Length: 362
Ligand code: NAI
Ligand code: MG
Image 1: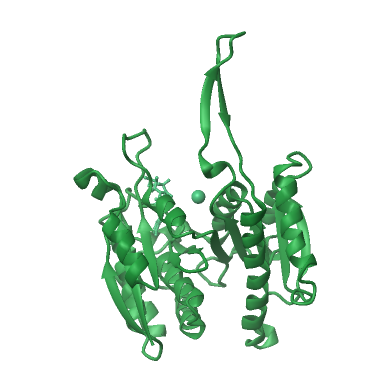
Image 2: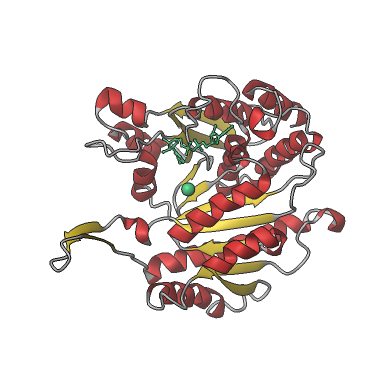
């Protein structure tokens, strides 16, 4: 079979880590045949042309590609007329309704104090406070400004995220069962933890909670082997830092999911190793969690691991699971050895050194 992947490096170290991930994909020998197409987007592209996400990029993705890899965008900290983030637009236009973020530790002599964890965070990707419905008014009594934001939670989007969470819990279990028992980190039943704050936000978070719960309750046979628990978002953060090993799949509304997944990244050493995939029913975009890292861009020392793992996630969601596992294993072997590491992980190696080490382990 053949797979066509759109490559959108965009800005900063996106231009270093996306080619690195491509090199690793190209050296997989027994999987699908890959075709790549380089596509424009990003803030620099906006500065040159006045658009951050050209129609041509969207058309090629929709009409020719099976999936895509996105690097990172630089977003200006002040408002720039006409500019809006191309990755946010892509998520919307391609209906990529779940952001899937595995956060797992690798044992290595290079990080002796590493907590052990292997969780998968599923963040609803289309609504919540991020619909950006904001306004400001002046309070006639005090003359002071009042800013408002709307929060949208739908049964439709909550259900899709919930189904994804329970299905991923089953998929993870199947993959675990391929490993010998002593190599399995998670030894309990698969589990979905629903994050919410419905004790306070009883209408919005209440609908989220009920809808995700109903996914299991209405498919009790299919998901009978998956345990379900709930965690209020504030105590979720507490528990995640105290006992990160206690979580398997975690599903959260957009804002809470954004916050807890960046926090979880801190538990595994560096933003430079944490991948994500934006997943919809018809398309998937792999995307490292990190940004464009202007402080190190152009120096050749960006950690390519997040991007390589994101390429693995892309393959996994396109159904090429065995090739994805090969990529993960090769990356884990490099980390476990702990000799070829970029500066963010305390080493002195370059992006290219890490890619070569991954290729050697493939
Ligand atoms: P950042 O993720 O770009 O960088 C944070 C820190 O982590 C920096 O010290 C950077 O050098 C380091 N870092 C990140 N990725 C790394 C890698 N692969 N290897 C080694 N070190 C790495 O976040 P920051 O600095 O807050 O934002 C920089 C720009 O990126 C901003 O314009 C921001 O808007 C944008 N951004 C874009 C995102 C996206 O495209 N999805 C996500 C987050 C930020
Ligand atoms: Mg974030």
